[in-house]
Image 1 (cartoon, rainbow, N blue to C red):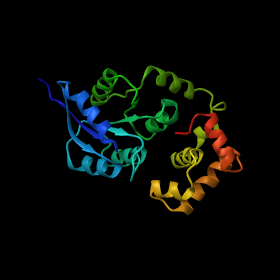
Image 2 (image 1 turned 90 degrees about the horizontal axis):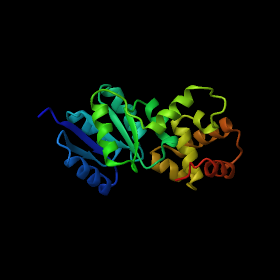
Image 3 (image 1 turned 60 degrees about the vertical axis):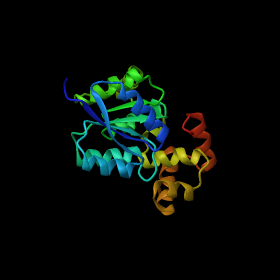
Length: 213
C-alpha cells in the first residue's frame, strides 16, 4: 500500500474533530495523526510533527484559522492547509485562499468531497468546489461591482462581522486577543472604507449581506 496521508485536525469543537476522525478512519490511504483545539496548538503541532495536510477550522479561539494559516504558511510554505468552515464560501473562501490556503470546504460538504479535497491538496494541487470556482472566475473580472466589505482587510472584516452580530468592542478585543484601542482603529477604518456612520448602519449592512453569524 502507498504511503498514508498524515492529517492534523484543528477545530475547537471536540464533536467535530471526532466526526472528522470517524470519516477518515474508514479511508485506507489516510490517518488522523494529531488534533489541535485552537490555532496556537495547531501552530505548535505543525512544528513538532510530520504532516501531509492540516485540516483547519476558520473560527477558533486564541488564534483564528486565517491567522494560524498565515503563520503556518510562513514557517512551512510546503505544508498544505485545507480550511473547513461553517461559514458559506462567499464569506471566507476567497480570503482564505489569498492567505495561502490549499483549499476551502464548508462543514456541510459531503464526506466524499472532504476525502477528495484532502487527496488533492496532499498531491500539491488546490481544491475548490465548482460553485467557488465560478465565484473566483467572476472575481477576476470587473472589481467595480464587488461589495464594499470585500475590500476590507481580514481584521476589519472580522470586526465588521462581530459588530454586526451584536458584540461590543470589549468582547471583540477579548475574543481576538487584541486591545480595545486596536479594535476601535479597525472599526474606524472599516466605517470610512464602507462610508458608514455607526454600528447600527454596520449591523444593517451585515444583515443585508448575510454576514451575521
